[in-house]
Length: 284
View 1 (tube, rainbow, N blue to C red):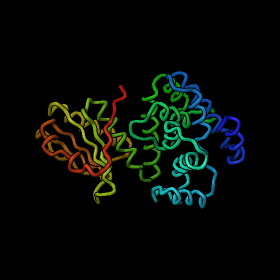
View 2 (view 1 turned 180 degrees about the horizontal axis):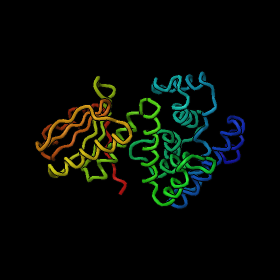
View 3 (view 1 turned 45 degrees about the vertical axis):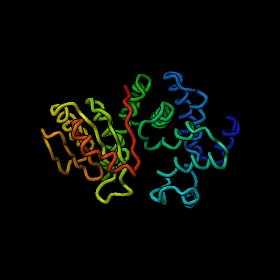
View 4 (view 1 turned 90 degrees about the horizontal axis):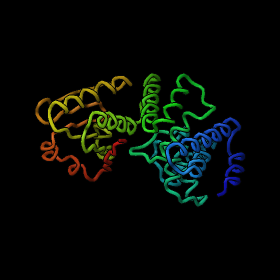
Protein backbone atom coordinates (compact mmCIF):
# COMPACT_ATOMS: atom_id res chain seq x y z
CA UNK A 1 0.00 0.00 0.00
CA UNK A 2 1.14 3.54 -0.68
CA UNK A 3 1.24 6.15 2.07
CA UNK A 4 -1.76 7.88 0.50
CA UNK A 5 -3.78 4.64 0.52
CA UNK A 6 -2.84 3.99 4.13
CA UNK A 7 -3.87 7.50 5.22
CA UNK A 8 -7.23 7.09 3.50
CA UNK A 9 -7.82 3.77 5.27
CA UNK A 10 -6.85 5.25 8.62
CA UNK A 11 -9.30 8.12 8.19
CA UNK A 12 -12.04 5.53 7.71
CA UNK A 13 -10.98 3.20 10.55
CA UNK A 14 -9.76 5.45 13.35
CA UNK A 15 -11.39 8.02 15.58
CA UNK A 16 -9.96 11.56 15.26
CA UNK A 17 -8.01 11.37 18.52
CA UNK A 18 -6.57 7.97 17.59
CA UNK A 19 -5.65 9.25 14.13
CA UNK A 20 -3.85 12.21 15.70
CA UNK A 21 -1.90 9.83 17.94
CA UNK A 22 -1.09 7.60 14.96
CA UNK A 23 0.31 10.49 12.94
CA UNK A 24 2.36 11.51 15.96
CA UNK A 25 3.80 8.00 16.30
CA UNK A 26 4.72 7.94 12.61
CA UNK A 27 6.44 11.33 12.92
CA UNK A 28 8.39 10.26 16.01
CA UNK A 29 9.30 6.91 14.44
CA UNK A 30 10.82 8.71 11.45
CA UNK A 31 12.83 10.98 13.77
CA UNK A 32 14.15 8.04 15.81
CA UNK A 33 14.94 6.04 12.67
CA UNK A 34 17.06 8.89 11.32
CA UNK A 35 18.90 9.26 14.62
CA UNK A 36 19.60 5.55 15.13
CA UNK A 37 20.19 4.45 11.56
CA UNK A 38 16.99 2.60 10.66
CA UNK A 39 14.87 2.91 7.51
CA UNK A 40 12.76 6.08 7.93
CA UNK A 41 10.18 5.07 5.32
CA UNK A 42 9.59 1.69 6.95
CA UNK A 43 9.48 3.29 10.40
CA UNK A 44 6.87 5.75 9.19
CA UNK A 45 4.71 3.00 7.68
CA UNK A 46 4.94 0.91 10.87
CA UNK A 47 3.95 3.96 12.91
CA UNK A 48 0.99 4.65 10.66
CA UNK A 49 -0.26 1.07 10.82
CA UNK A 50 0.51 0.18 14.46
CA UNK A 51 -3.04 0.94 15.71
CA UNK A 52 -4.83 -0.32 12.60
CA UNK A 53 -7.21 -2.42 14.73
CA UNK A 54 -7.43 -0.16 17.77
CA UNK A 55 -10.95 1.15 17.09
CA UNK A 56 -12.65 -2.04 15.90
CA UNK A 57 -15.38 -3.55 18.07
CA UNK A 58 -14.70 -6.18 20.72
CA UNK A 59 -16.75 -8.61 18.65
CA UNK A 60 -14.67 -8.01 15.53
CA UNK A 61 -11.45 -8.24 17.53
CA UNK A 62 -12.51 -11.60 18.99
CA UNK A 63 -13.49 -12.86 15.55
CA UNK A 64 -10.02 -12.03 14.19
CA UNK A 65 -8.40 -13.73 17.19
CA UNK A 66 -10.34 -16.91 16.43
CA UNK A 67 -9.87 -16.67 12.66
CA UNK A 68 -6.09 -16.60 12.91
CA UNK A 69 -5.70 -18.89 15.92
CA UNK A 70 -4.29 -16.30 18.32
CA UNK A 71 -4.01 -17.04 22.03
CA UNK A 72 -7.33 -17.08 23.91
CA UNK A 73 -5.94 -14.47 26.33
CA UNK A 74 -6.69 -11.89 23.61
CA UNK A 75 -10.41 -12.67 23.63
CA UNK A 76 -12.42 -9.85 25.17
CA UNK A 77 -9.27 -7.73 25.51
CA UNK A 78 -9.02 -5.43 22.51
CA UNK A 79 -6.40 -3.25 24.21
CA UNK A 80 -4.01 -6.19 24.39
CA UNK A 81 -5.13 -7.83 21.15
CA UNK A 82 -5.05 -4.88 18.77
CA UNK A 83 -1.37 -5.16 17.91
CA UNK A 84 -1.69 -8.89 17.21
CA UNK A 85 -4.87 -8.58 15.18
CA UNK A 86 -3.43 -5.69 13.17
CA UNK A 87 -0.39 -7.74 12.18
CA UNK A 88 -2.64 -10.60 11.04
CA UNK A 89 -5.05 -8.42 9.08
CA UNK A 90 -2.27 -6.48 7.38
CA UNK A 91 -0.42 -9.66 6.42
CA UNK A 92 -3.25 -11.90 5.29
CA UNK A 93 -5.84 -9.43 4.04
CA UNK A 94 -3.75 -6.51 2.79
CA UNK A 95 -0.78 -8.50 1.52
CA UNK A 96 1.94 -6.82 3.59
CA UNK A 97 4.77 -9.34 3.82
CA UNK A 98 7.59 -7.29 5.35
CA UNK A 99 8.27 -9.28 8.52
CA UNK A 100 10.33 -6.54 10.14
CA UNK A 101 7.46 -4.09 9.73
CA UNK A 102 4.87 -6.63 10.91
CA UNK A 103 6.89 -7.48 14.03
CA UNK A 104 7.20 -3.79 14.89
CA UNK A 105 3.40 -3.55 14.75
CA UNK A 106 2.86 -6.83 16.60
CA UNK A 107 5.17 -5.97 19.50
CA UNK A 108 4.51 -2.26 19.97
CA UNK A 109 2.23 -2.80 22.98
CA UNK A 110 4.23 -4.97 25.41
CA UNK A 111 7.52 -5.43 23.58
CA UNK A 112 9.31 -8.74 23.09
CA UNK A 113 12.60 -10.50 23.71
CA UNK A 114 15.54 -9.28 21.63
CA UNK A 115 13.57 -6.68 19.69
CA UNK A 116 15.02 -5.42 16.44
CA UNK A 117 15.91 -1.76 16.09
CA UNK A 118 12.67 -1.18 14.17
CA UNK A 119 10.61 -2.80 16.92
CA UNK A 120 12.32 -0.65 19.56
CA UNK A 121 11.68 2.49 17.53
CA UNK A 122 7.94 1.87 17.16
CA UNK A 123 7.62 0.65 20.77
CA UNK A 124 9.26 3.88 21.98
CA UNK A 125 7.51 6.20 19.51
CA UNK A 126 4.12 4.93 20.69
CA UNK A 127 4.91 6.11 24.22
CA UNK A 128 6.65 9.43 23.53
CA UNK A 129 5.02 10.93 20.41
CA UNK A 130 4.26 14.65 20.57
CA UNK A 131 0.66 14.23 21.76
CA UNK A 132 1.69 12.27 24.84
CA UNK A 133 1.59 14.44 27.94
CA UNK A 134 2.42 12.81 31.25
CA UNK A 135 5.04 13.39 33.97
CA UNK A 136 8.49 12.46 32.72
CA UNK A 137 7.67 12.20 29.01
CA UNK A 138 10.14 14.93 28.05
CA UNK A 139 12.95 13.09 29.83
CA UNK A 140 11.95 9.90 28.02
CA UNK A 141 12.07 11.69 24.67
CA UNK A 142 15.56 12.99 25.37
CA UNK A 143 16.66 9.50 26.44
CA UNK A 144 15.20 7.99 23.26
CA UNK A 145 17.22 10.35 21.11
CA UNK A 146 20.42 9.25 22.86
CA UNK A 147 19.90 5.56 23.74
CA UNK A 148 17.02 3.55 22.24
CA UNK A 149 17.83 0.50 24.40
CA UNK A 150 17.76 2.50 27.62
CA UNK A 151 14.41 4.10 26.86
CA UNK A 152 12.84 0.71 26.06
CA UNK A 153 13.97 -0.62 29.44
CA UNK A 154 12.69 2.52 31.19
CA UNK A 155 9.32 2.27 29.43
CA UNK A 156 9.00 -1.36 30.45
CA UNK A 157 9.79 -0.44 34.06
CA UNK A 158 7.13 2.28 34.00
CA UNK A 159 4.55 -0.16 32.63
CA UNK A 160 5.29 -2.73 35.31
CA UNK A 161 5.05 -0.13 38.08
CA UNK A 162 1.74 1.21 36.73
CA UNK A 163 0.20 -2.24 36.45
CA UNK A 164 1.34 -3.28 39.91
CA UNK A 165 -0.14 -0.11 41.44
CA UNK A 166 -3.47 -1.01 39.87
CA UNK A 167 -3.29 -4.44 41.44
CA UNK A 168 -3.32 -6.13 38.07
CA UNK A 169 -1.12 -8.97 36.85
CA UNK A 170 1.83 -7.96 34.72
CA UNK A 171 2.40 -9.91 31.53
CA UNK A 172 4.90 -12.59 32.60
CA UNK A 173 6.70 -12.38 29.27
CA UNK A 174 7.54 -8.75 30.05
CA UNK A 175 8.78 -9.74 33.50
CA UNK A 176 10.99 -12.44 32.01
CA UNK A 177 12.40 -9.91 29.56
CA UNK A 178 13.11 -7.43 32.37
CA UNK A 179 14.78 -10.17 34.42
CA UNK A 180 17.09 -10.95 31.50
CA UNK A 181 17.93 -7.24 31.20
CA UNK A 182 18.88 -7.14 34.89
CA UNK A 183 21.06 -10.24 34.56
CA UNK A 184 22.78 -8.73 31.54
CA UNK A 185 23.49 -5.49 33.43
CA UNK A 186 25.49 -7.53 35.99
CA UNK A 187 27.43 -9.55 33.39
CA UNK A 188 25.32 -12.69 33.40
CA UNK A 189 26.45 -15.08 30.66
CA UNK A 190 24.48 -17.02 28.02
CA UNK A 191 21.10 -15.83 29.30
CA UNK A 192 18.20 -18.07 28.25
CA UNK A 193 14.45 -17.55 28.61
CA UNK A 194 12.35 -20.72 28.46
CA UNK A 195 8.58 -20.43 27.98
CA UNK A 196 7.20 -23.30 30.06
CA UNK A 197 3.65 -21.96 30.30
CA UNK A 198 2.19 -24.71 28.10
CA UNK A 199 3.83 -27.60 29.95
CA UNK A 200 4.19 -26.46 33.55
CA UNK A 201 1.64 -25.94 36.28
CA UNK A 202 3.94 -23.98 38.58
CA UNK A 203 5.42 -21.17 36.43
CA UNK A 204 5.36 -19.51 33.02
CA UNK A 205 9.06 -18.83 32.45
CA UNK A 206 12.50 -19.98 33.48
CA UNK A 207 15.20 -17.32 33.14
CA UNK A 208 18.66 -18.85 33.27
CA UNK A 209 22.17 -17.43 33.35
CA UNK A 210 25.71 -18.51 34.16
CA UNK A 211 28.44 -16.75 36.12
CA UNK A 212 32.14 -17.62 36.52
CA UNK A 213 32.18 -17.54 40.33
CA UNK A 214 29.97 -17.61 43.43
CA UNK A 215 30.52 -13.92 44.14
CA UNK A 216 29.13 -12.83 40.77
CA UNK A 217 26.29 -15.34 41.07
CA UNK A 218 25.26 -13.70 44.34
CA UNK A 219 25.60 -10.21 42.83
CA UNK A 220 23.27 -11.16 39.98
CA UNK A 221 20.76 -12.79 42.35
CA UNK A 222 20.73 -9.77 44.69
CA UNK A 223 20.27 -7.36 41.76
CA UNK A 224 17.36 -9.36 40.30
CA UNK A 225 15.67 -9.55 43.70
CA UNK A 226 16.14 -5.83 44.39
CA UNK A 227 15.15 -4.54 40.94
CA UNK A 228 12.01 -6.67 40.70
CA UNK A 229 11.02 -5.61 44.22
CA UNK A 230 11.22 -1.99 43.05
CA UNK A 231 8.43 -2.67 40.56
CA UNK A 232 6.31 -4.66 43.02
CA UNK A 233 7.39 -8.22 42.18
CA UNK A 234 8.19 -9.97 45.44
CA UNK A 235 10.44 -12.97 45.92
CA UNK A 236 8.65 -16.05 47.23
CA UNK A 237 11.64 -18.29 47.86
CA UNK A 238 15.43 -18.22 47.50
CA UNK A 239 17.58 -21.33 47.56
CA UNK A 240 21.28 -22.06 47.17
CA UNK A 241 24.36 -20.04 48.00
CA UNK A 242 27.97 -20.95 47.38
CA UNK A 243 26.94 -24.23 45.79
CA UNK A 244 27.15 -23.32 42.13
CA UNK A 245 23.41 -22.70 41.86
CA UNK A 246 20.99 -20.06 43.12
CA UNK A 247 17.24 -20.31 42.55
CA UNK A 248 14.87 -17.34 42.88
CA UNK A 249 11.17 -18.17 42.79
CA UNK A 250 8.92 -15.21 41.91
CA UNK A 251 5.87 -17.35 41.21
CA UNK A 252 5.28 -17.02 37.49
CA UNK A 253 9.03 -16.44 36.88
CA UNK A 254 11.69 -18.81 38.21
CA UNK A 255 15.30 -17.64 37.99
CA UNK A 256 18.26 -20.05 37.84
CA UNK A 257 21.81 -18.71 38.27
CA UNK A 258 24.48 -21.37 37.71
CA UNK A 259 28.18 -21.89 37.59
CA UNK A 260 29.11 -23.22 34.17
CA UNK A 261 29.72 -26.74 35.53
CA UNK A 262 26.39 -26.86 37.34
CA UNK A 263 24.55 -25.51 34.31
CA UNK A 264 25.97 -28.27 32.16
CA UNK A 265 25.12 -30.86 34.80
CA UNK A 266 21.46 -29.86 35.19
CA UNK A 267 21.04 -28.78 31.52
CA UNK A 268 17.57 -27.27 31.84
CA UNK A 269 17.67 -26.23 28.18
CA UNK A 270 17.78 -29.92 27.20
CA UNK A 271 15.35 -31.03 29.88
CA UNK A 272 12.79 -28.43 28.76
CA UNK A 273 13.87 -28.51 25.13
CA UNK A 274 10.36 -29.10 23.78
CA UNK A 275 9.48 -25.57 24.90
CA UNK A 276 10.35 -22.28 23.21
CA UNK A 277 13.84 -21.12 24.24
CA UNK A 278 15.09 -17.60 23.51
CA UNK A 279 18.74 -16.67 24.04
CA UNK A 280 19.09 -13.08 25.14
CA UNK A 281 21.29 -10.78 23.08
CA UNK A 282 23.04 -8.06 25.03
CA UNK A 283 22.31 -4.47 24.02
CA UNK A 284 26.03 -3.65 24.28
